[in-house]
Image (spheres, one colour):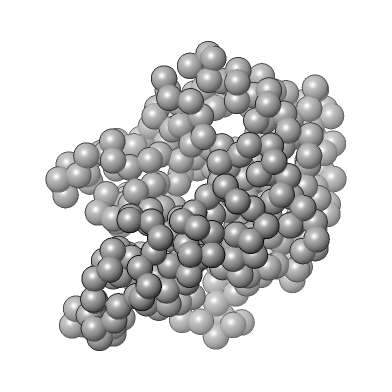
Length: 317
C-alpha cells in the first residue's frame, strides 16, 4: 500500500509571526511534505477577534523560508477574490516557491468576516457553491495558459483575461475542500486534482461513494483525484496527558472546550490511537493527511507524528 503523505497547517490565528515562521521551519526540518494556511480574516476557533494572518501573504512568506514543502490554502475562500486574481496570486506563489504551489479552493462559510469586511456572501451556501464551480471553471484554464472570458449570465465577468507568466508547474494542482453531495463533490469531480474531507470513517466512506458517482457522470476516473483527510492530532504517552495539552491550547485560542468536544477531527491521545485513525482512512484510499495544529505549536506532536506514527502506519499498511 502507498506510504502516507503528511502535511501540517499551523493555525494562523492566535499566534505571533515569529512563532509561526519557526513552526514552518521546524515542519520542513522534520521531513513533512506540505504546509498549509487558513484563508480567513477573523479567527475561526473561539473568539473571532483574535490575531489572524492573511492566507496568501502567509504562504508567500513561507515560500522564502522553506525550500521543499508544498504550499496551499486549506482552503481559499472563493468569495474573497475574483478567479482572475486567484489565478494570478497562485502563479506568483508558484514562482516564489520554485513550483510548490497548490490551489486550495472552497466555497467559504464564515458569515461574520464577510459582513464586517463588506464582502458579498451571496444568498446562501448553494449560491456560493455555484460561484465556486464557475470560478474553478475559469481558474483551471487560466493556470494552463489559456485566455478566459466568462460565460454570459454568470457571476464573474472576465473578458479575454490571461495570466503571464505561466506557473512553473506544467499543471498546478487544484485542491477542493468540502463534502456537499449535490454541488461541491460535483465540482471536485470536474476540476479537482485533490479533495480534502473531514469526518469519521462511515461519513468518509459514504462521501467517497457520492464522489465516485459524480466522477462516473462526468467521465472522470476517481483515481486521478488525490484523497486527503484533515485531522487535529495531539500525541502523548497517555490520553490524560494529551487532554491537558488540548485544554491548554484551546484556552490559548479562547475556545471553550464544550465547543470542540464533539469535533471528531481532534485525535487526542496516544500514538497508537492516531495510527489507528490513519489506518482506518488509508483502507478507504486516503493516503494524504493534513494536521491542523493549534498555537502554541506542539513540537512533541509534530515530531512524534512523522517519526513514530507514520512509520508504524506505513509498515502496518
